[in-house]
Amino acid sequence: MSHTNATLDVQSTAITPAAVALPIPSFPSDAGPSGKPEDATLHSPGGSGLAWPDHAREAAGADDRDRSAPLDLSDAAAIEELRRILETHGYSETGVNQALGREEGRSRLGTDLPVYLRRLSARTPLNILTKLFCLHARVEAEEARATLAPLTLSQLLAVGLLEVVSHGVQARLAISPCEGLWLAHDFAEDSRARLAADHVLGISPATRTLARLTVRRPAGRVLDLGAGCGIQGLLMAGHCERVTAVDTNPRALNLTAFNARLNRLTNVECRLGNLFAPVAGERFDLILCNPPYVISPESHYQFRDSGAPGDRICEQVVRTAPRHLNEGGLACVLCNWAHPEAEPWHQRLREWIADNGCDSLLLRGATQDPLGYAAAWTRTADAADYDQALSRWCDYYARLGIQALSAGAVILRRRQAAHHWVRTEALPNALTEPCADQLEALLRAEDFLAAHPAESDWLDQAFLLADGLHLHQSLVCRGGRFVLESMRVEFHDGLRFKGLVDASAFRLLAHCDGRRRLGELADRLSRGGAAEGQITRSRAVALVRQLCAHGFLVPVEGAGASGTGSPGGEREPDAQRKPALGHAPSQTQEGSL
Picture 1 (tube, rainbow, N blue to C red):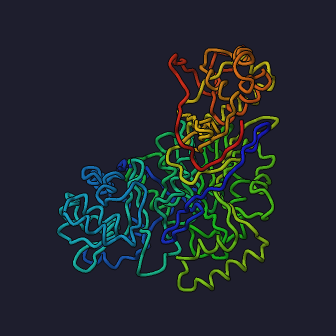
Picture 2 (picture 1 turned 90 degrees about the horizontal axis):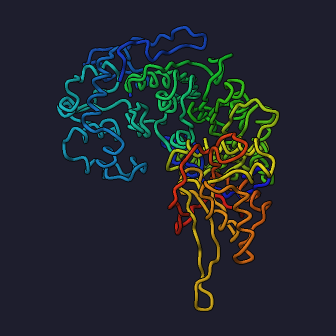
Picture 3 (picture 1 turned 90 degrees about the vertical axis):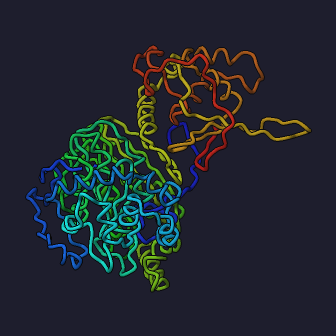
């Protein structure tokens, strides 16, 4: 973390991208109807209705439908019945993973397809649905008819979800269960041709990263910028009054509208246009954005290539977002950015956020050199001319003077204040749990730090160990006996902050039970015990500032003379509360406390 009076050494970790048929190792890329057509609406930037072509056909001729044709949203009853069928047959994340025999969130559907098809040999409804909507496998017409009843194949052909193939039917689109939603999107791999320019991505590690960085608190309006299949906005729809999904790809908005219907979300609208143009002059409580951030000389894939030079697309989003935030509103943007090799990774991001009226949290997941970055993005996508692609991409970086490329996220909070804080942190390789509570605690901690500059404020405040905090002790054998070598505190989930603690910091932590004020604790710890465990008042305040900034300690509401309240909320101290011991650390960031 980069922060006044508290600095941690940031270690590089990686984020895997949302790469459809692009297995990128290091960078982020990437529920039924109401029955009313206007519930999930689609608008052009000017607000007028965008008319989709009427593509309903007779079942006999539906198999020659244009594969990029939009779904027909007019049959609300059919979409509702499809939802009921998916739910009844257990087509969920857990159900599909169990049927495939794969670990949660881990998939190699292309190379392991023969394995999965054998595991789905039993003709159960869940297996048939998984073959259709997960594996893109052909299913015999009678099997599909029995599984999807009372829906008819003609209905699903007319909607556009199925197509007729030799000896059966096949899904035109994948349907992925994710966090209680069902989401239609394009299949990840198509052996018949290169991905289409208007390909709509599904669920990727980057998709989940953005979702887990999202603070899901009650909100008025939410903007999902670069919506794709709509997952970010749909996940927020249950927490807000209105979601506005914006994308330049009409197919993406068609699928977002369909997914809103499928998940019974009636507060979602779709607007076609570039970046913030469709919402000019409007403000939101939350902005979520997974833009086409890949720094590339290409302009083929809408989901990947912005066509803008360098990292211009991410810069534009980060610079513009504050003007569309309400007071207290948050924005979370996944980014790739270029910078000189010798320059701190966050320097360019700091230029983007200068004087923007927001507090800023800058997260870095990984940094690569141009060749490594180019290889990651071209190895599969341009397999036929891999060598030429590498030359093309590296020449592009050389022309722009790019020496290093980083990936991560920028989180902004609009706040009226004379001064705004900026923090730089590492983004863990895999966010396994939502970070919302941790991010909320971080915001409260920064507010508390700003509101209490005086040492006396801290001495008059009681603090409590945060739930979920682990203390790890490392012992080494010397002279035939184990002696303590080091101690560290850490979170195993979320942003996984961790820091080394010495004997005095350990004694202080062990006594932070939420009942005694810091001044009293410091006075007690300044007397007795070994000299290395003693602590002065000034040292206690300096330690607690850092511990609070990382969320290891939280102020207890009502326990301080200032009466400003606690960032952590009011909690009754547990008389039996003890520090957690003995858990191994994660590979993240670390510093001394």
